[in-house]
Image 1 (cartoon, each protein chain N blue to C red):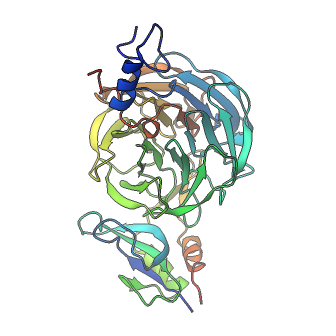
Image 2 (image 1 turned 30 degrees about the horizontal axis):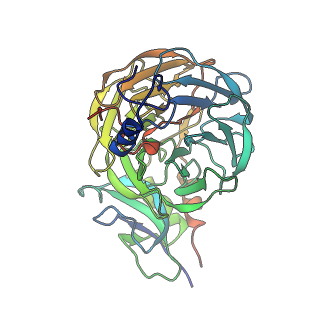
Length: 100
Length: 330
C-alpha cells in the first residue's frame, strides 16, 4: 500500500477531508471563500488515490512548491530570535510522512 | 452580601430553594476564581523557570508564590479543572504533565505523559477533559491530545487541528467546545478551529481572527472567547461567540501591547498575564470584563517577569455552563 503527499482544501463545512491522514501543513492563502481559503499540504490515508489539488510526488516537488510562497517566512524561537524559514527541512519533514 | 449564593462568596444564610434556583438557572458559580500561572521564560541564565504563582481574579492585586513545578517549563500548554491545574513541562523532559491542586499551594506532581513533547502547545479543558494541541516542529504539529483530569495517566490521541501550528491559544472553551485561535506556521495565522471536547475527532474550521497573529493569550466565558495581544506586540483584543462558527470582532485593547502573554478567566473577567516586549520580559497583568470589553485595566504584577507561561483558572468558561456574569438573579 502507499499514500500520497498532496495539496488540498478543507471541505466546505470546515472539516478535514476524510482522505487526509495527517495534514494542515504550511497553509498558502488562495482566493476561495472561508473555510476553503487555504491550500494545505497533507498525507493521505494509506491506499487512497485522492490527489486533492495536486500531488507532490517527491521531496523536491514539495520544496519547489514551498519556495513559491514562503520566501519571506521567518522562524521565531522562544527568545524572539528570527531566522529564515528552512524550506528544505520543511520538505524533508513532510516527505517523511510518505508511505511507499 | 452577594446578590445570589456563590460557592466562593456565600456568607449569610441561603435557602435551599435559592441555591437550587441558582444551579438550575445557570448562575451558580462553581469555582473560587483562583488563577494559577506556571513556568515561563524570565530571561535569566536558565531561561525557562519552574515558578508557580497565583491570584484570585475577582480581586485586583499582585500574584503570590504557590510552589514549584518539578522542572522548568516554557511555552507549555496549561489548563485547569475545578480542582486541579495542569501544565506540560516543555523545557526538559518535554512531554511530562505536572499538576497541582488549585486551592492548596504546593509543588507540582507528575500526572503522566503527553503523546509527544513539543514547545508552544495550547491547552484547554472542560470539567472532565484537558486538551493539549499543536506545537512547534518541522513541520509544526497538528496533534491534539487529551487527558481525563481526575485520574492520573498518560494522554491519548484526540484528533488533528485543521492547520498544524504553534503558539496558538485557547482557554476559550465552553463546557462543550474549545476554540483554538491564531498561531504560527511559522508565519502568523488568523485561523480558528474548534473541537467538541466530549468526543474525539478532528478540529473543524471556525472563522477568522481580526488579524493574523500568534503568541497571544486567550480566555473566555462559556459564551464568549477572547484573545489579547500577540506577535508584533499587538494591543488588540478579539471576541467571538463560541457556539457560532463566525469571525472574531475587535473588542478592545490591552494596557500593554505584547506577545507571549497567557490568559485565563473566572468566566466574568479575563486576565492576561506576563509576556514580552522584546527584549524585556513583563510582569504586567491586564484584566478586562468579558461581556463589555473595551480598554483593559491594570490588575497587578506577577512574582517574576516572564513570558510564555502556562495559565489556568478553576472557574473558566469550560467549567461553567451558564454562568457568564451576565446571568442575573431572576
